[in-house]
Image (cartoon, rainbow, N blue to C red; front, top):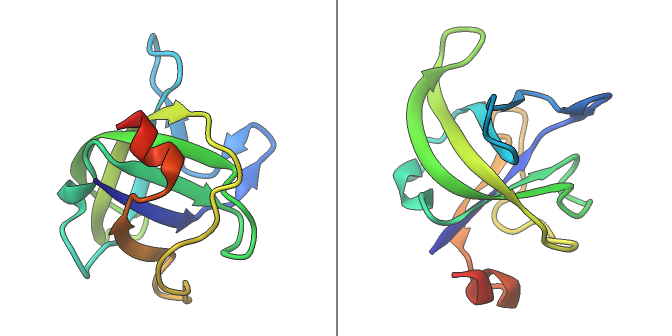
Length: 119
């Protein structure tokens, strides 16, 4: 099982680029993320975490239901994740340090105890 930690800024009503799906409570589409280093389809069944910064614990935790090719607002190819929110406490950042061009830490193994218990 895999996980990814992403930098995403909270807004007044939730998280930037995280959209609820009508008629499916707790299910969201998070887009659009550019992931070049590995195959984002490895994340299906794993976890997606949103952090305000890599130094703060995740403010949003979810299981990845599906991954689809998508485009950023500027037209670059990326991926959209359909996710189901889960309750997990204080997930710390894992993976590489984010940069101006990469807003994630890469795909990592989901090895925390609460991740393994939920599998």
